[in-house]
Length: 219
Image 1 (cartoon, rainbow, N blue to C red):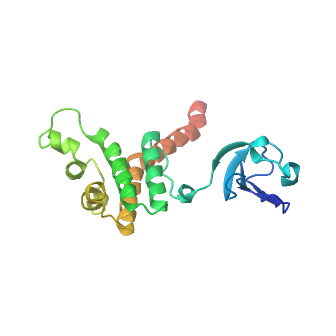
Image 2: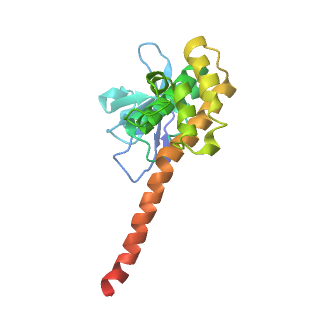
């Protein structure tokens, strides 16, 4: 990925384009608010691509303001591949909370990811040892899933953070950075096992079938 940056030294405007050859991408532009005289970095698109072309004029006369850069943009942890959109969105929210040091909120979001991912793994029919409380309570559901081979045994030790740390974050507000990062690790590994690895295997099988298809047609 290439970048282009230029600044003419006036009006406090500094453009940063991700790819100078792609005129559809957003800019990041530092500007000064004319109301409060404070600076911020805006995400904008459209308009001229050089600061001198708008000298002395307001940014929003030439560009559409898409948003601005703030602490949430420090979130650098992306959800694993092939995770359903609703779970991926919750994961991103947890990563944002982690980036801004909201440990309890981050832990609660990661716990919600695990909750959403494991609910569909339960059988719909009545099964011995699986009652309404176990279905509802994540702290009880996970041991049942491990005991019945629904989750990989190698995740069992990591799963204790859900009961110990997750409940603390949800009810007592006592999570630390270490606790939140433990929850991130378990959530990431769990989502990979449930969604990423099976999809990767599925795609590998499809590629194998495609490679062997020409040979089969020649026979």
